[in-house]
Image 1 (cartoon, one colour):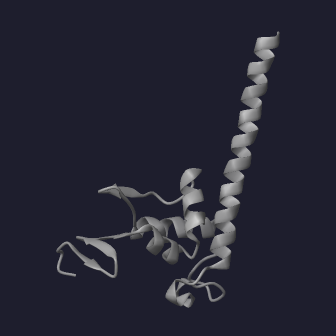
Image 2 (cartoon, one colour; image 1 turned 90 degrees about the vertical axis):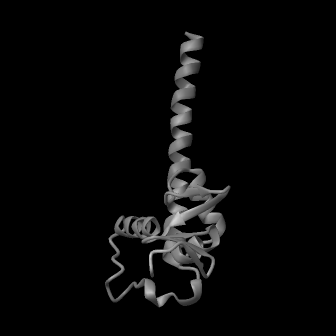
Length: 128
């Protein structure tokens, strides 16, 4: 790459940075659009940037998010059992889909529990 700003296969290219759209980020991670949206809603997903009203994801952030989520279950991409290169054409990755769904459910359950604790504390203060 010559350092210029351009486009390649729908990705926005900046000097030494690649920004992917939502569907491209989903294909890169191997999860569905709903999964990425759910991760973003519970604030557990990869960081994103807004460019002219479009939500874009840095390729480096996606790689870091993927490594983080895989390291939580003790899986490394470099090992023979699990490789990112084995998923050609943006096919869904069952492991990543399961891990993303688990992250969302953990955040939802934790949020509900905190809501119940704070709500119960408020009711306790009001009644007594």
